[in-house]
Length: 87
Image 1 (cartoon, rainbow, N blue to C red):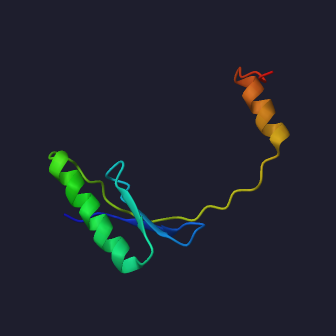
Image 2: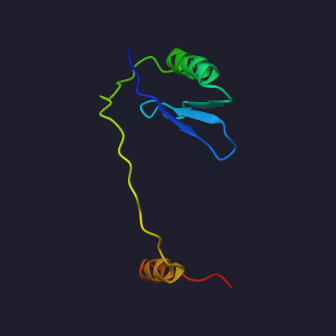
């Protein structure tokens, strides 16, 4: 079986791997070699528990840039949704 793996680097410099098609399958490591070894182990452990899975087709990744949102706008939307300010 083939799995798409997303690899990122966190703010502490660790590499973090996630398998989107296997919820909860993620790990981290200092080196890429160690990360690959650990994510393979995480996938294998997942498959030991979950026997009948359907893996979706990995299409790719897309970078999205979002503009900053002002706190006032967030509060306005939350108020419209019925949330109220805590006192």
